[in-house]
Structures are given as structure tokens and as C-alpha cells.
Length: 154
Ligand SMILES: [Mg+2]
Image (cartoon, rainbow, N blue to C red; front, top):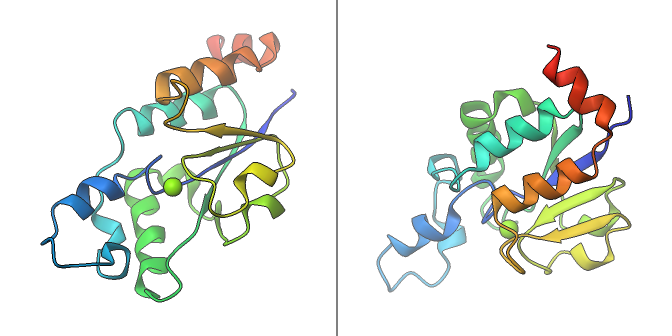
């Protein structure tokens, strides 16, 4: 079975960083240094989307950049995954260089960590209509029919 290796960003893609940041008092300049990353709500449709991509038979990893100056966030991100996507336990890359990841697809909403130099295809989440339904449809188009049939027969 042919499978794609897919990396998914957390903040703004799986986890709703922006909503949590908007709820902080305005005088806080760096929300990323004070927020508890384990408490973020999932982005709309994100959890279902990851389940669909896994059902297509693909290999899914999380690729996230925790704030260097907020070391607790590193563990908080791990705890978010354990709570919302336990299927992805131990499938987490913490990196400030997403261009160094080796794989087929990177789903990410920013270009601040080398995303545009990723050697596979970067899906710029949130741009050009790439919400979760469109992203799942796009990956399905790249999925061998054999994988989809295997899933139907489960
Ligand atoms: Mg992001």
C-alpha cells in the first residue's frame, strides 16, 4: 500500500492558538510566552480531518515549533496530543526548521520556519481556500484507490 508521509503543524492548524491569545488581557505582548498550550481548543474540523487522513492509510506526524523561551509549552503540546489525538502519541517533531523534515506533505499556516523550502508539497493552511475539508479532499485525490478501497472493506 502506497502511503504519504504527512506532517501537520499545531498552532493555527490543529490547535486554536489565536482564540486563546485573543482571550488574554490586551497588555500582554507575547501570548506565546504565557499561554498553557495544553488547553487550546482544537481548530474546527481538525480532529475529524486527521482521522480521515489516517483512515486513508497515510503516515501522519505532528511538526510544531514550541516557543524557545517558554519551555513548559514543550510538554503542554505533548499533553494536548495525548488528550485530543492519542493516535499520534510519539509521532511529534519539535523543530524550528520545518524545511529539514523529509516527507510528502506539510500542512502549515505560516512560512516562518522554512515551510516554503520543505522538499515535498507545502499546503499553506488558511490560504487559497485551504481549510480542513479542502485539505482532506486534496489529500484524498493524491491517495491510491487501493488505499481507499481497503478502508471501505474494514
Ligand atoms: Mg502554525
